[in-house]
Image (cartoon, rainbow, N blue to C red; front, top):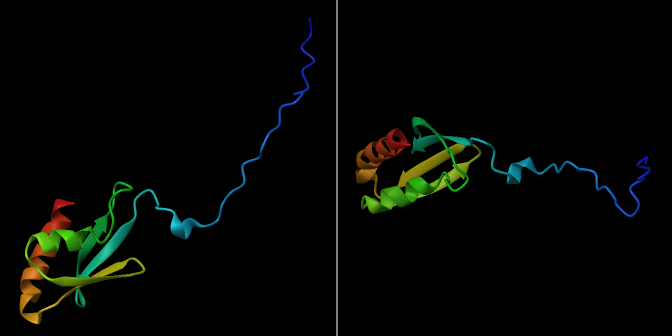
Length: 99
């Protein structure tokens, strides 16, 4: 008639918070993009599959040779050849606009 269930045999594992947030992608990571020392804009990553260095693949598909470096929330793109600096800036602006 009465339910005297005391949880016999069942157990409960409490939720323990894990503090390694630097390894976990936040809801919307955002990065400031630079070509050399010139700031070009901010890009907010909307999905877990997006990465800040996706711009490097985009630039490579445009035929541009660059190096990229992530420094905190700054992503710095450096053209391999200084003469391509303006082309790289325009291409990064297109990349940011399309995001």
